[in-house]
Every structure is written in C-alpha cells, then in structure tokens.
Amino acid sequence: MSVKTLTMDLAIRYGFQLVGAIVILAVGILIARWIGNLTQRWLERQAMEPPMRTLIVRTVRIVVLLMVVVVALDKFGVQTAPLVAGIGIAGLGIGIALQGVFGNVIAGLTIIFTKPFRVGEYIELLDVHGQVTAIELFSTTLIHIDLSRVVIPNRKIVGEVLHNFGTVRQLTIKVGVAYGTNLNAALALVRDIISRNPRILKEPPAVVGVSVLGDSAITISIQPWVAVPDYVDAQVELYQSIIEGFRTNKIEIPFPQREVRLLPAS
Image (tube, rainbow, N blue to C red; front, side, top):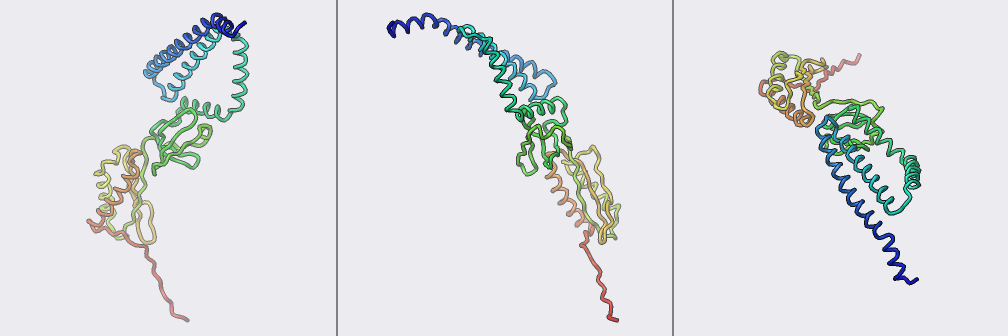
C-alpha cells in the first residue's frame, strides 16, 4: 500500500472523528466561558467575598472543560474509562507532591469563610502588620505604613494569634507640660485642637488626660481615633498643632532637669 493510499485511508477513517472532536472542543470552550460568566453574574448578587466568587467561577469552567475533553476524546475513539482512572491516580500523586500548595488553598478557604479579617482592615500577626489589600487562595497581601508589601502564605495565618484593628486605629501621642501649668486650660486646648482636625473621628471619642507624673514634667496622653489611611498624616498634624498651640498660649514644655548638689568634704 502506497503512502498516498495509506494517508487517504487514515483521513477517511479518522478525519470526521478529528473534525468532530475539534468542533466539540471549540463549542465546549465557548460553553464553559458562557457558564462561567453566567455563574459570576449570579454570584455578584450574593453576599460573598471576591476570592470565593473567583474560585467558584474557575472551578465551574474547569469542570465543564474536563467534561468536554472527555466527550471529545470519546468521539475520537479513545477509551475514556482508563483515562479517567489514570487522571485520578495522577491527581493523587500531584496532591501528595503539592501538600504545601493545597494547605494554602484550604487555609485561604478557611479565611474566606470564617472572615477573621476583611480587605481594608489593619491587622497584626507573625510580627508583621499592615492594611489588608488582597485575600487570595494562596496568600494574603498587606500594605505596610512605608508602602512596602507583605505577602503571607495563608497556612501561616490560620491558627496564629491575630490582632485585627479593623478600619480604624487609635493614635497615642504624649506631650509633657511643666508642673506649674494650668492643666484644665492645657487639656481644653488639646481637645480643641483634636476637634478641629478633620482626620480625627468623632466616634469613638478621643481619650485625653494625664498619664504620668514624671521627674520634670506632667505627661498628657492624647489618644484619638482615625481611619487606617490617615494614621500617619493625623499623627504628624496633631504634633505640629499641639506644639504651635502650646507656644501661642505660653504653655511650657519643660526639658528634663536634674538638681546636683555638691557637698563640702568632711
């Protein structure tokens, strides 16, 4: 049998099967995309975290595509039962090899479902802290105050002690005044400065009062609440406003002092 005759025989025998398989794959890809988009639109109307919606949509698309591939292979004449069994065995091997990856995924799903924190909140754990900008299946991303990114594998988060500040933080500012200062006037001035700063939240109310009686000064503690993005700016503005207000109202901020006495030699 010549090569030409063999080629024609193969084309006649498998050509229609190949074309049918390609058509099934093309239609299956379109159907998977359509079902995925339909699922995403439906999930967007539900109260669900974005990472969970993404996971469900991708899972739906992959399942549809796998079904289409199996149908296309069956159309092409491939025995699908051994193939499915082989895929299962390969999946088990891959699962064992990728335990760490799957651990991150399971931890990511745990975070999404239990919601110990959300995007936009400020958290602290594992000696790192920052504002949550993304919760993904494999990792959680924080933005530090210095605008650096902190990427934490999800398996490191689940089971650890987590400090969630929420969407607001409390500033802690301390300033010393002389012992001869009219404390009522100084505290009233500080409260007025706080009330005029637009970054300071009205609720919860700021805590202002004497915190320490030092060797050379009375320490006033100022603890207002601000939104997480305003934390640094509000702190800088308050320090400047307080020092300017104290200078204008002649409120002394004393330097540390020590009294040294020289005793005559006996």
